[in-house]
Image (cartoon, rainbow, N blue to C red; front, side):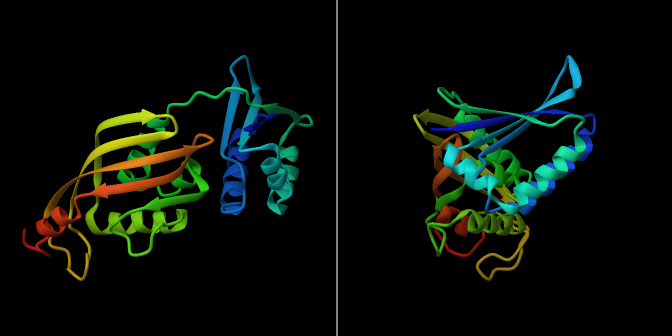
Length: 231
């Protein structure tokens, strides 16, 4: 059962608070069990903030609390506040999300904009990715981010979503990706050739996060456009 912790804070030091949260996200990468973190401000009282942290379960929240970095960051958080933070523990009874929007955000921000860190926010810690072009699959989140970095250096890809269908915890996306061969690919130095490839990817969600992905795309078409094979 999804578990949400709401922490009410009283502080005007928002910039310092954001820097503290950024430091915690970096330090706890790969260990934290939080699925999502939202910091919001009361428009009627600008010094009243709400920090909303979502976990897959109450047990996962406890494991997160036991991390050394969590305790250290909490002490620094208290020092930024005018009063002692107040905690509310919530058991989620219903949660409606637009999974298609999450997939769009992944393609737009992680791949098109090259913001690899966003993947840590959108993907579950045990994320798995399946790609017929990968020599070692399924790939975990770290492998997936490394693969995206290689594609960014090689082709500077830009995704355009043509269609999306959602069914339960699955989202299927048909896409067209264009780019320029600007880095080494399969031993072939950069040619500057433009490329255009079509494909489809299906994502599976758990607790509102990307948990698994299956890619199917025109690999032979890409190789032909780069002159690696003749069709």
